[in-house]
Length: 74
Length: 236
Image (tube, rainbow over all chains, first blue to last red; front, side, top):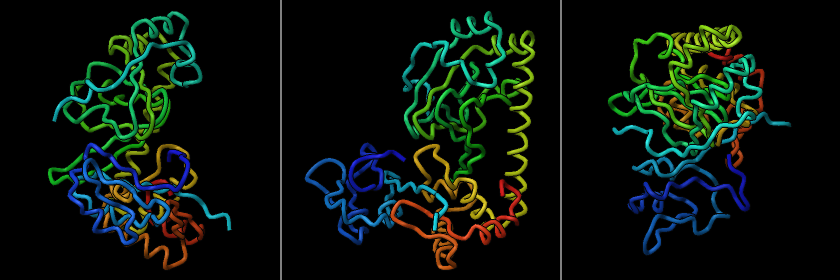
């Protein structure tokens, strides 16, 4: 998984986004918003719980929630 | 579906590209020079398709950096991952050896930033005839691939999906390769659908065998997972 600054967010393939709004409606934390034009945006990234609801409902497969699998050190 | 070959970027080969790859380590200097002269390196972005099922095969494809996923897709769109190949793998080896398949019989996509060395099939056969260490490494590589596919077939036939998921989680735990695994990718690997993976992950979490922390799946009960995976014939 690519390391970035800030919270890890679902990956968006903007070219695939048809602005249908399914992810906006599915997000329980109101993280995803539909701007006036272009693909959806993560307007409130710190609230994302990575629940995968957006990935689940996207009819175009434009959103991806990859998981890193590790052994718990506890 | 069009050919995937038009979109990749290419760069020239240097000697460092060929070093430390077991398959090429024993090549004579003449063979190396021939490979540098006749080969080319193509670069792919994560998830970019390298070949679609049905694309013609006219070069040998050696994985230099990154990784690839080899899969087939059913008519209704369900994907089954057949192989995850890492650095050093000769991607289309079976087709090159049998010569019975002029086209790719599965689709191939990059699982991360990936570089592939492509060289002429004639050169591949020349190496087999004249470079014994290349041929020896090739046989080892082929045996490993064959064993993995045998395990996959046995797993899909003989193990239930809970066993396959446990084995899959154990197999990939701690793996630094690639960008991580979506639930759909896990489903494609263990022969089920995303919804089943989501349900089983919740069930495993309820059992205390794992915990999900944001984008991490942390495996907590090794004994329980290994016992469950013991019913699997693939990589457990």
